Length: 316
Image 1 (cartoon, helix red, strand yellow):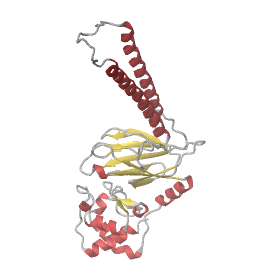
Image 2 (image 1 turned 45 degrees about the horizontal axis):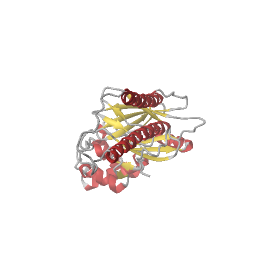
Image 3 (image 1 turned 30 degrees about the vertical axis):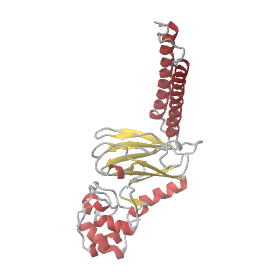
Image 4 (image 1 turned 120 degrees about the vertical axis):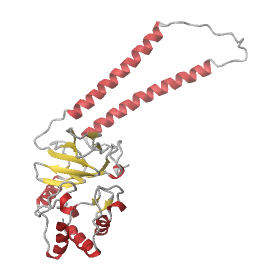
């Protein structure tokens, strides 16, 4: 099963959308079968036969029964589909925010995701962590969707429907996954040259694992003596204009928060594993990973590149 398949819902809104899709598919399939059967019947029954004299068959004009049938039946089908769609839309959009729910603000950037947990005091990037929702005590995650630049779209097929992020407009969505694991998604609105590499990764953790992640993310950046040179290089270049590292002079907000960079599995919005080698290559030349990336190449010397990589690799 594909990790982005809509046919394996793992969250209440995704399951509701899947159920509606199945209903629509069933109704349209039945219509297709009926139309094809009538066509086959007409072809077989009224085909030209050897004893035909070439004259036209009797012409019938007007049939109340037929006209009533092709008016009433489509109307009933449309009403059923309308009511089913309205029910799903209402249930998804008007979900109750229970006391135990998690509040997240997702901000779409070209071409990465920023996640803020206002009540928990956490800011991270590209990898969203949420707790699994227990059916007896649901703990849904409500996500406020904002855009920092252009149109984006938040879509994790197995967890919920697609919701757009529009500049100067606040949208929202929610998920309540009942399975742990990694769920993948994609920005579903063309937003620029690297739209295809603006990936979504949602980690659904057990409650204990989520609480441990929260505790770790609340800690300030770890300071190590052996990376002092790299920290100095990082702080004297324009890196600090775009990136933030808690407890340091770096307070930029244009790029991802790097306080716990190495706690993430990937870099560059999910396009590469977060290894020291990939991190070094990314810093040296972001264009080699994502042509059109907003992060510039800093033209560091090999020694500066090694030292700043070592510093960033210590941020866990």
